[in-house]
Amino acid sequence: MSTAMLETQSTDTADAAIQAFTVTFLIRRFDPDVDAEPRWQDFDVEMYATDRVLDALHKIKWEQDGSLTFRRSCAHGICGSDAMRINGRNRLACKTLIKDLDISKPIYVEAIKGLPLEKDLVVDMEPFFASYREVQPFLIANSQPEAGKERIQSIAKREIFDDTTKCILCAACTSSCPVFWTDGQYFGPAAIVNAHRFIFDSRDDAASVRLDILNDKEGVWRCRTTFNCTDACPRGIEVTKAIAEVKQAIIRGKP
Image (cartoon, rainbow, N blue to C red; front, side, top):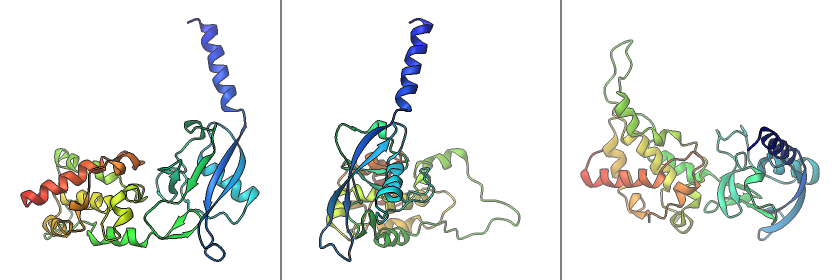
């Protein structure tokens, strides 16, 4: 391909990126003060291909309907607060680009499932964090390191649980799990992932305690290995694999 053709293609791509177009968003609204059930409301928004769904929500709130309610904080995929269902899939609104969605149809946006709906796209996260706290997601060491020394860990031992350190507690995995939708007692994938992070940490001394907790009838054995959680994770964590490793550790009686 000639240099001139490559330059033309590059110009066309750049032009497409700066060309605005109208996108229709169907947002599932719910105001507990006036609504008996959630309802769908449509909004037409001028967007660019490189805009994000979060940008659309901002435009709607700032320019069309100030009552629209949703969570967001860092807006860069770190805090995990803007997890929601976009076209039927759990995603972070701040990481979902308009160009990656089918804009020939309305874009559906609704709150994540399985947690009590509070208003519009906001759910009560307390049941999620209650499960998280129950697995004791912190380092428990019976011995203290020598004064002025750190707890030494090899690179190989660190790699064993490296994947599960990436969790940002967005609840995308847990609220994509069909077992969690139907069983309010199930710990859910995120809690198990955060237990995994410490169960396999060579510096921790409470692996057996966490394994006992997750051996409960509402623990890892409720997982049906549908891989919804792995598909939903915005950090690319192999959630189903981590759950399987915890199951194996329970059977062995040790990590």
